[in-house]
Length: 456
Image 1 (cartoon, rainbow, N blue to C red):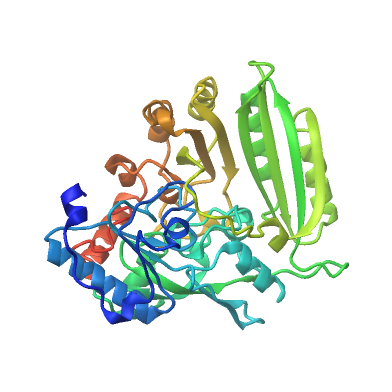
Image 2: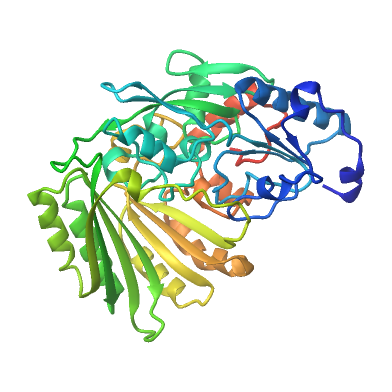
């Protein structure tokens, strides 16, 4: 958007929106214009409190675009933690859903939970744990429900519960025409399919119905008990270590999930520091103790810590302010196995000063048990997730370093990538899924009014 666009007069705000609009002259502007990763400079932020207001905001955004004769940026923000930074913009409109944050248990016995899109996952876990329920969500409690649930959700319990997206039974969607639509397998089934993995490109989801899992309390009375093991390894032979780790995690039950963070060792360039986080869902059993013991034998352990805690404690929400301070660049790939392509790429990347760390996560389990067309998250063959975290000022170099590995993979988790290029977006869905999404977008938002999103 040019300076002349910023100065151009927009249509007057309707009375229904004037009370929820935040402008640059407002004292609240600084606190609502950015997200966790990026400082935004929108012209307007709307703090929606209900579905009717969301509809009015969508209608107003469409009117602005028609009035100025071209698109203006229109972003949707729930938790403001999205790595893509689509939830903020410069010179456009942001609709903030953080006031729509209710969490209600509809049926404790059946595990049915209604959650508004502006809630954050730490608060969801806190509420539903009181009913001995759990939903696998993001790794960080401040992550918003709306962005993660519509994009995927490779959470800390991914081997137990699969994707967060896969647990959606129904939702409320405001489409680009301002209409409120209920979606599920029977009603508006095309939208229901698309919002589970397609992001916000087909509409704004304001509320979800989730299928949560029951977890029996510990004998101590602890709700949704979790066994947590954190290990620090110093690794000389990364290839041997990763193969041993993969053999270990794939021989555990799906109650165990595991993720690694690989970084260069500051004192010895021939050593890779590995931080492993192993998470057991449920009260610790003899099997859990055996798996934790076996993890100690993967390589020499420099530091270890084991604890018993509740899931809501593991993902509690600190409710940090959004100041755009966490300025990193992330790339990722979904893989089916550990092989020489992966191992060679990891060695190359870890030699670069631009790379801060590399995340490796086992995602085999429930993800692989659904068909590719179950929803719009199509890479059901993937069993590994690898992400590179790096210096945002060296994004071109990071893209180059990651390219060989990404070309070898089966796809990209679009919501976990800072690269918003068209070539990256084409990797976010399989061809069949992308073509199907394009048809849904054409039906519900052909003019791309809700335009700050990955578009298939």
